[in-house]
Length: 341
Image (cartoon, rainbow, N blue to C red; front, side, top):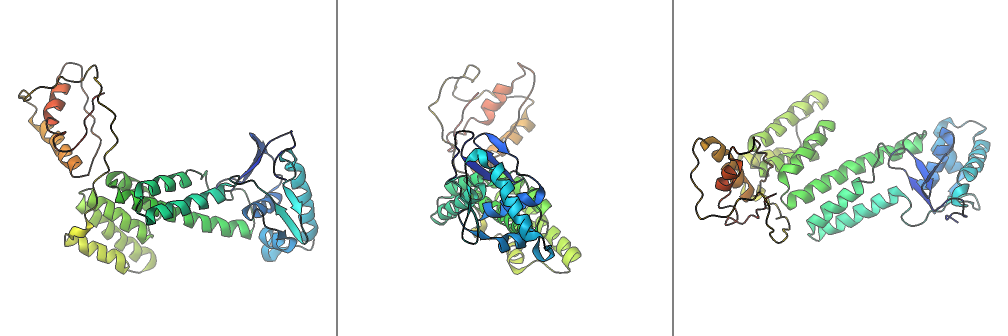
């Protein structure tokens, strides 16, 4: 069974980072590195029987010593002692061993479940739900998967999961672009491209995010950088998809224009102590032409679905409220919600 016997609690296992097991709130010591490798292999295949031969291949690969079979027996015995606070989750089968875990107790399984749910939401057009669910899936990660575990199985899973993680980042970005989160997505994608400069699919998403944020020159520069990096590193040119996207941007293809940012849900208006009183026409401001021009440009971008944060600071009494009141005089009439804090 996988539930404790009164000394601990339900067993939970994390593989999306350093491998760890917990009984309730207590982290369990899993022993030496190869013993942890046996545990990680069993956890990754929780509920299924894993033979000794499979465990040997997972931990040692082709370099297994003659004593490997006995070592597996020793490691399993050690794991039973380590997992005792969680009851007896490690069972012996006909030709191997099985680790039983309760539903929701393995972070890897939860990651896959959330990813699949997000895929379904995206396919049905529920892009905000998809983005939120992808975000929840990525939130389960604590570092490099199968951390601290040796052996060919752990390395293979590590590479597979890192690739899947990047894929989820891409799907999340695509979902956010569908709800108009262009500026925020561009910042996140720029960091991902810096870590994965040869991944053209990431660059395509970054180009699209920048283009939809009104930053066409930066979007085109991403393509030029891709061409340079791919030539230097691989001796190849950008693929057809990235080249076509660049050509469409140069041609100003209207189909590349994205949706506006989804409006935030606004609660009923309440009076704020320092909010300016509504008036008919704002009084003219003198000596603030440049500030007004900049703020009104930001309002225009917001109305077009390319919102940004703007910080206006200054000493008390110099006219910040009057400046904002003038710049934002018609923002509600243009379809935006306005609140003061």
